[in-house]
Image 1 (cartoon, rainbow, N blue to C red):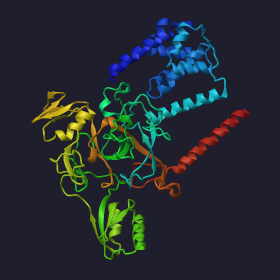
Image 2 (image 1 turned 90 degrees about the vertical axis):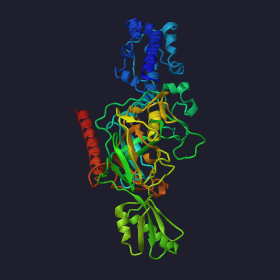
Image 3 (image 1 turned 45 degrees about the horizontal axis):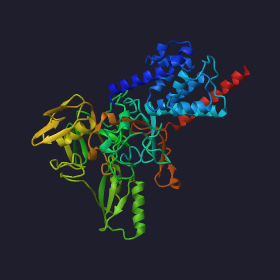
Image 4 (image 1 turned 45 degrees about the vertical axis):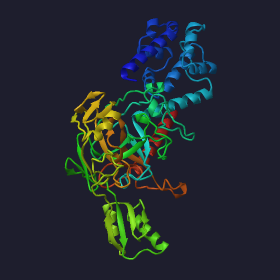
Length: 537
């Protein structure tokens, strides 16, 4: 729904609330009209049920309100003496319409100074759990969220098995667009493996299904910085149509809402308004080669020939051990001619490899200019591939682009999929929403995301621009790092030098684990001392 439609929907809900509770308001010493005034009626209701005013805010936060609104229904019934388990169940099962019964049929009286503490230990336990979930959901949605690195696309900057804290505050937190879903769960409920949200993901039914009308329009709170070139960014994969991110051959395409698409982490190498080009694997922005931060290390694939071929398995294992020792962790493959293909290596690792006594040649594996049908924008007009791409302009909010048959294939997806317009070409003409168009003004900023591991990263080269409304957050901290996380728990080992380190910074990585432990111990002993002193006094 649009914001206008949501506004009308909320007004209808307010009328229903007023009709369901106006007599209850009178019994609590309030005026009948107070039950009908939007927001104000909620503030008054909090006073009636003896709950803090800030519950009103929680009632309007998506996902959180799925817990808070039923809680308010139950608390309203309790304020009028209906505090049994059956009453609570009726409030929830009838979606609050049980209040109509209390308002018009039941003979109830307002209990002004009721006991707010649950009468049973079970009730107290449930209340504690619910509000712990509410607090965690707020932090998870609007402040910080954990994220684990699943692939080696940013290897040497971020490693597989790094557990990150992703800040929503830097770029501004998005409000959830999906309004009905499980709290603190992305797209799948663990263990049972079922979809965690209410949405019809069938492409043909996406605009007609009533449950899809429950989606909120995109809104982002102000952040304290914009996405900048070379930032490492977590975002929703724009072209995600997979039921399961590990299954690349689903039974059909799954059309997901933006905030439920697969979360990815890449480096932003081009921001809105940049002209991007890739030459021989290196990114150029506005004609100048992009310089990565000190901790970043590009990786490419290499062909390695030997002076003496490895004829025994022991020699091959020794070679693989050598690769690990010099920092080549993505592995290699022995070819039929006795050479090796190294999947990913930094310049520093290759320099160490080239001086080994049995190495003959080390040659980068890169594609010359030519068409690759798997590369954006999937148009034979452009002789682009993963190593040679562009030049291409990245759309910027408010900027106007002259459209032609030569560039429409680059920008059609952005205009159609991300900005919601119908784009059709007829002969030599372009039509947007059935109107002849020679130009287009973009409504949001776009970004170009790539992995530092240039030959082992599915990124913008394959699916194009990343819109601003897909930006999720900024990784700021590594709180845990486990080597071998994909190889079974017996092969795990902690990377102690990475635990409690920042994602960005200078050349040297600094761990804050010891200061953190000292801080926690200090706070713990201070609290114990304060409690003991208070008890003695």
